[in-house]
Length: 330
Image (cartoon, rainbow, N blue to C red; front, side, top):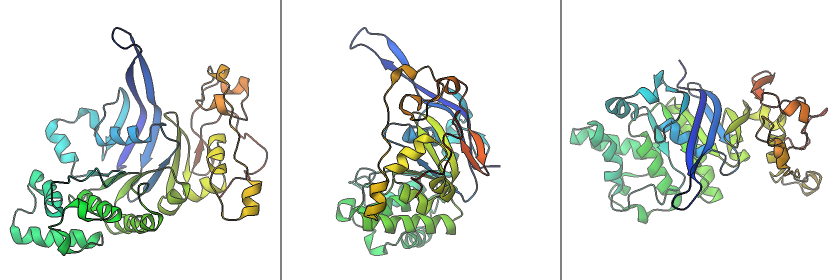
C-alpha cells in the first residue's frame, strides 16, 4: 500500500464574472492528476507560480475539497473520512508552510506551540514524560531546551522554520507536506534546513511531498521530481534522470532559465523563447499555446503521461519532440 495515491484528480473553483449580479464560470485548477508517493520517498513538485502546486498540497491535507477522482492516504479515501477519522489522519499527515513568520502564533511560547498537538490528541500527559519529549523534539531540529520559554519574534527565520518543523514532527507523522519551506530564507540558512529535512526523512522513515520553484533544491533533496503546468502533471521522473534528460518542452524551458556558474556555458544556454499563440487553445495539451514544437495534427490528440524511458513519464503527443539530447540539461 502506497502512503499516497492520487488517481484522476480534478479540482475546480466557481469564478464570479461580474461584481454583483454577474454569472459564474468554472475554473479548473487541477486536471487529471495521477501521482503516487512511496514509503520513505521524497517527491518534488516543481512549476511556475499559479500552476496548482499549493492547491494540490491543500487537497492532500484535506484543506480543500475536490470534485472528482480519488485521493488516498495509507489506503483511506480523504473524501469519505468523518470528523473523527480526520482527527486520526492528522497524526499521520503534517505540513511545514512556506513562511515561518506567519505560521507560528506570536502569542505562544515555543513550549505552548509544541505542546498544542499533544493536548489535542491526548499525548504525553505525564509532566516528566512531556519534558523529555520536548527536549528530544528540539534536539532533533537543532535547538536547545533553553529556547522553550521564548516567543517566535525572538528567533531568526531559520530558527522559526526549525520550530515549525518540530511542531510538524510532534505527532510522529508518516507523511510530511513541505510547501516551499526554504524560499523565504537566506541561502546559507536554506542549506541548513534542507540538510535537516533530509536527515529527518532518513531517520524517521518519512515520506515527503516537497514543493519548490528551485530545481537545485529539488535535485539535492528529492528522489523523484514531477513537473506541473496549468494544473496538469507534464513530466515525472527520478531527479537526476529528469535534469539530465528532460523529455517535455516545458521542462526544457524551465531548465533553460536556471543560471549556471560558467559564463561561457551560460552564454550558450539562452532561455527558451516561449510563444503566446492562443489560437492553439483547442489542443489537449495545456502547454500547446506556448510550445515551440507544436504540431496541430498531433497536439489535438489525448495528452496523457506515458513512459519514454525506464521510470520516466512524459505527457507530450509529439515525442520525441527533437532528435538530439537537450542542451539545457543540468
